[in-house]
Image (cartoon, rainbow, N blue to C red):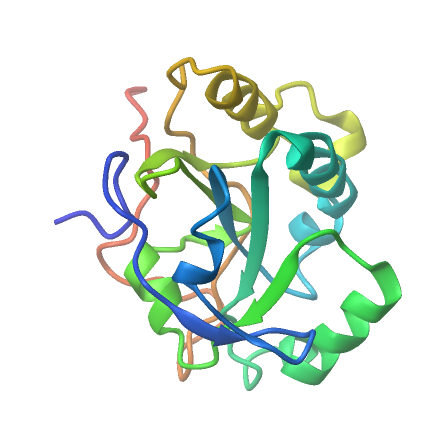
Amino acid sequence: MAFTLQTGEEAPWFRLPATDGNIYSLSDFENDPFLIIFFTCNHCPYVVGSDESTRATAERFAPLGVRFAGINSNSERTYPEDSFPNMVKRMEQYNFPWLYLYDQEQSVAMSYGALRTPHFYLFDKERKLIYTGRGVDNPRDATKATVFDLDRSLEEATSGRPVSVPVTNPIGCNVKWEGKDAHWMPPDACDLIQSTDF
């Protein structure tokens, strides 16, 4: 069984607190035609370098029924910057157009098979996964990006077309798992697309 959620599979259920003071579950998004769950955090340079690109995508596709929800699953013991109070401060400072949820127990990251920050999951109306992977090809400095995988996927999905490239490798820092070295990943976690270069 693959570590990361596979295309065609249903979005795993969750119930998490958000920086706006409310608690959200998967059912709170049932009226949204498309849902993007993405794993993110406060400190990762790949997140920081691409947040404004993600903002532009979220704002562009919101009128087409696309909802964004970011989830921070990082251990605050590994990275104190990723604590919930710092999440609140970051949202107050930047006012991102998405909900920012806290997965303190890391169970949601495990159920989705989150590999890195950022790691995007696009679900259709039936909450079946139709795209997973990176947002852009250069998230550390999205101003230099030349491939916009998430935008392309959303353009196709919101136009009623199948997603032409449903899987890409996320680029970023690994999720910071509780009690583990900062660079540790679960043994069965690997790139979504295996290299064929020898």
